[in-house]
Image (cartoon, rainbow, N blue to C red; front, side, top):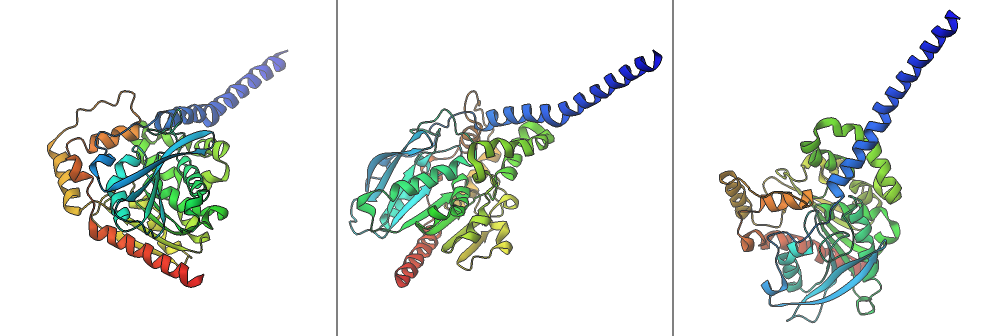
Length: 361
């Protein structure tokens, strides 16, 4: 009898240990992952406080369209310059997280002045597009895939090459979308600016400041969560896409980027690049936007040193809130301006890529 009682006690103790281990290794991380995804991606992104409109650029014309992306209808527009009728190509532009296509108007204006048709759209869960929330980081590459697919169905654009320009979240999408062979075959050249290489490092960097290093418990479950929703897209990396692609790629990043650290960038993997048509340009002092004049970038930094934001996050998406806080005291027109020389280097890359494509034809 004593032996049976001892065995029951031992068995009970063993179950306690097993359940305790399960709680620590599975239950707690799973719950943490659910809260993490809800915190970071479980809200929509609305217009930022310093966005621009077509009224700020009277020489631009816009044609509004809608297209599908995995059950949601996305809102986009084609932008051209009123004074130009002979176009070079279509540039599909993918925006960053926490903002919308409205934050890139100056870049649309630049490309339109240079003779391009610009196609821009709001990602799922952003501004004018449908979606209860922004869902997750791989959503940007899914939306970009569908944007490129949509452009390919527009009869009036059949004779134009497709170029891609992605920034930040969109920079990640511009590189990772190249893992999709069918999509990559439709693209003549890609520019990825300030893009992160994979989903984990950027989540860890951006969210750990709120959750501490406990976020590490969620890593395998975060991947599992996104694999369930996005399949192999969740495992794609930017450098992996560039290496699979046969065309021209321009990768640009600045080492002082505080939003997407150089450590987490596509650019830092340049030594692993096997695509002979890929070019890497690394800056020291251009910040996250890259396209903004350096003197204005420095001006914004100085303004933020002298002022403390009073904006409350409330129900705002965390990425949208961070953007609004950083630009709260900046002049709207100045922070949305572009460095013509920087943009000229991008346009020169596109021109050369188009020339090479014509020579191959």
